[in-house]
Image 1 (tube, helix red, strand yellow):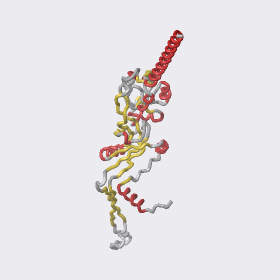
Image 2 (image 1 turned 90 degrees about the vertical axis):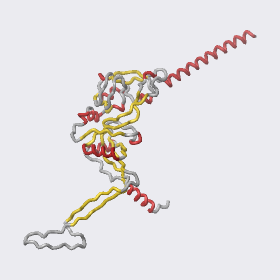
Image 3 (image 1 turned 180 degrees about the horizontal axis):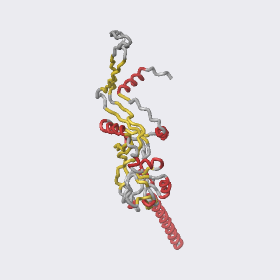
Image 4 (image 1 turned 135 degrees about the vertical axis):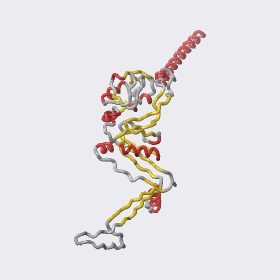
Length: 317
């Protein structure tokens, strides 16, 4: 009886140990797969690729790297390379040797020719490329090369005084209630008219906001380079780059000469924000239908609407 119990106990102990070993193995495997995903085949630069260069296979190679899924989505993979190249992909920022090919630093499709080289982007002598510094809260979502943006600017903060505009209007009639003095004229010569001038004054209380320019073509999105928090952590993490793209620090846009001066004025004197145009608006702009100018919005407009809403009776439900 003791021999049976001893053998049973040894057998149970063996199977329990084996079960624990299997559970431990599965747990370690799951942990490794969770924190060290399968390597991703991403595209890297063989040598330095200057900005505004059209890509081809000779410039690129495939490298397997252990990347988090979120980070891997930002890079071109080997499966995506053929599609990228067939769409005339152009690098809009310098890509150094060994660096992964980031989707944010490429432009593809019809816009590729416009930004393939700075000289091509500036084929029109009436245009210039301007850099607009931005902060994360000054533009919506992800902006990529080829997008069209609007530039908004706000000047002043209440109460900072009035802005005024004076226009002189001249006509050939006397003011109402004022008799014209007849002047004798020779026969056949028309009598002279009395000219008067009226002064029209316009004023608005600051601050004022205005959509200054519409339909600026983005040719490059410039990112900060920040340290990769996953660099050197975990098995296989040494393959991750030491630096990755951070927030957007500036946009390079294609602007008309006269708009470049407006951009400079807005950046120097006001607070600038960015609006993203839809694809439908872009089609209209390229077909020669510009976006109508805006009236702007002032502190005077706000107070008028504020009191107009307060004095309007609220409908009874």
